[in-house]
Length: 321
Image (cartoon, rainbow, N blue to C red; front, side, top):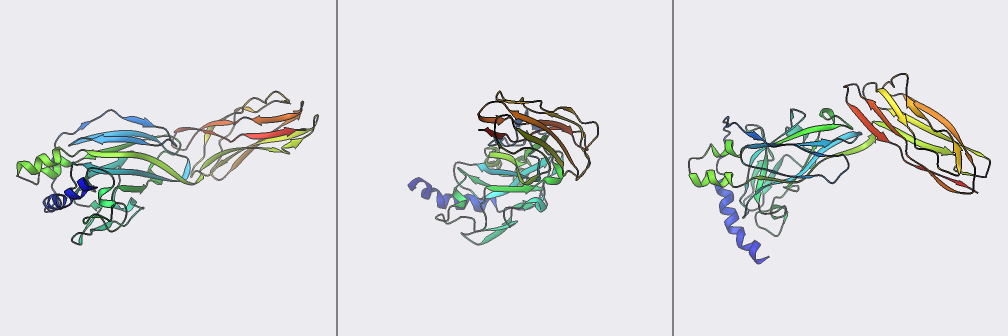
């Protein structure tokens, strides 16, 4: 804590230096692009470092929910806190992420130290504001004189439902335009300041909310039977995408030993239109006393854009007494 407080006054001086100029300036610097990484949907996310003047792509699998959000925790790496500038551009599948997509906090914010007010997004630079910070804590800590009054300064959440391929890979590109910002300065130390501050993101992910837009469910009725009796297993596919899904193929797990029955596997003859439900049933007969788990059924399909997706149902338990 002693070390952190020692930086407070120095951080303010750096802040005044960095925030002195807010005039847009753009140069074509021939940015380089790193190799992409892939993060499956539902995993914890990816950590990224985006060097000065470079683009870094990451491929994220989108959940199949009715709402999808791009979330990230981001800062400009700096040994000491030093204010911030707008120099992170973001695109999803070639679509720029602008101010209208920010949903987790107000677009404008205030530095508590001097009531300086600015915005998380610069229309002139088409870029998002990042704080020069040694960690993801400093400007969120109200014990510091220069903390941010509104919202977590490091966390960003963008609504991207309309531009992602749900249930499929998506390309997100993070661009460090520190070179464009540095071009506004003539002092070599100012330019070096930006060169030495890569963008640090940890993590970045696509998160879902709401109902799955395509679902496959598996149920059994009844779930408690006696030897020789039957239970009816039902597989239901519901399509809530805007368009039809086609080339739908279902592959159900084998019936476990102790039950007798033939599962459903194969390709549907027709597409499933938007808002429609497809249902198929089969019977299993109790052969032995015990508790049996009916494994998940999987399905693959193509959405209206031609992207293929794969989903799984839950499992079911049948008890034979």
